[in-house]
Length: 88
Image 1 (cartoon, rainbow, N blue to C red):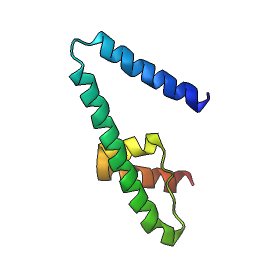
Image 2 (cartoon, rainbow, N blue to C red; image 1 turned 90 degrees about the vertical axis):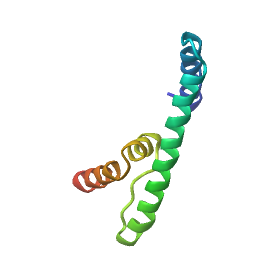
Image 3 (cartoon, rainbow, N blue to C red; image 1 turned 120 degrees about the horizontal axis):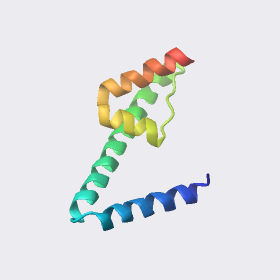
Image 4 (tube, helix red, strand yellow; image 1 turned 135 degrees about the horizontal axis):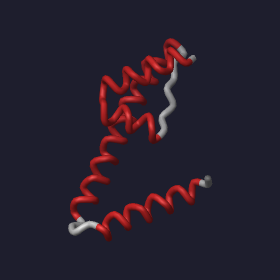
């Protein structure tokens, strides 16, 4: 699926969620919270990749890994490292 379609579907879903809810502040707060967690996860992954560069270790930074590391913090980051070492 093209990136444009994914972005359009996400925006349409958010607008539908806002239209279906009684309050506009609630869904916007949840979207903001998820965005904040994604940024925190991306920062954690960046520093992990920075340290892992010495051992040729790299975890890709994408929305799924950033959300996992952002929501679960260090246990999520440890899970990503273990999964990466176990699969590769």
